[in-house]
Amino acid sequence: MQKHMAALVSGLAGRFEQYLAASESFWRSLPAGAREIVGFLPVDIGDRIGPRTIAQAVGLGQTARRIGADVVHSHGYKAAVRGVFAARIASAKSVITIHNAFPYGALRAAAYTLRLITRLSDRIIAVSPSMAESLAARGVEEKKIRVVPNGVNVNDYGRKSMESARAGLDIDPAARMILCAARLTRIKGVECLINSAGIIAAREPQARIFIAGDGPDRIRLEELAQRMAPGIVTFLGHRSDVPDLLAAANVVAIPSLAEGQGLILLEAMASAKPVVASRVAGLADVLRDGETGMLAPPGDTKALAEAVMKLLHEPDLAAAYGHRARRLIEREFAVEQMIARTEEVYLCVC
Image (tube, rainbow, N blue to C red; front, side, top):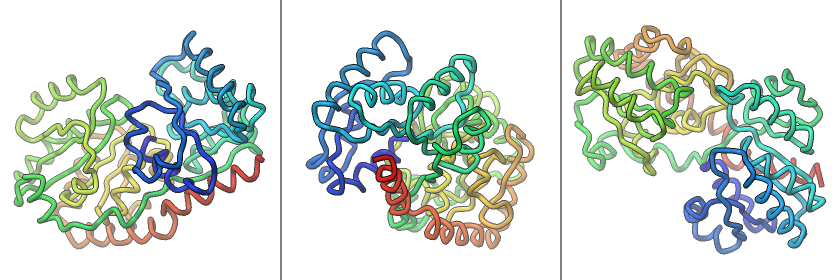
């Protein structure tokens, strides 16, 4: 979500007067040029909705009214709770982007939150057609929903060869590298990939799985990897060099149990890398099985392992998938398209 927001704020800089309400760490992650012309409103959204949420919404609403905001654009469920009320206080339009599949767990509270924010909003942006269908099925007015897929700057990917990327990352040139980049939570399905490691390594002794990302399940997953595949799985933690990691990889695995769209999928495809992803809404909207990559049933360890092995053992097929994937991203998922479609939504509600 943060990469999407950074790309959007940077792309719209100079075209709209913008103020970003976010944490200071996120603000600092923006390009310097964007920070020079975008206002900053420090706020910590946090992981919970509670009494502080109301105070934040009121404060943001008062600020939005003072600066004369026309649109309050919120990203994600928790930010949207603040954003819709802030927009009401400021007499501004409310736009919400839903990035992720319907929240996993705590379904009653999540369903209430979804009903609240969508009723109070003027437009809801879904990042995939499947997400739009899911929202409509849960009672969101279809006339409010607009599909604006994520986008990536294609020129940021595929710039390094596998050899040079591995040299810079100190990765064994002979390794058969399988990369997974995800937040380490249950819904991302990383456990399934770890469970498949033994099957993969038994047939490909040089196979190594690299997991980039952090999250609340990291310790549990590290312990699982030590039991199931000692020496096969490496945890890299949070990384800012994902394009280099992708360049170094032979195969990219995305074993999510649910996904809104998955920015890492677009990044991998832009890098012309063969991808094995779960056959779930959001991922299957983009990845075309047998054409631009392979899909496997979510949570199916054996099917995931078989798909990874096929791509490792058939390099010509893997390369063909990767090249077709790159062309698809260039045509349909460039960051410029995402920015232009979002701008259309702003102009539509104003």
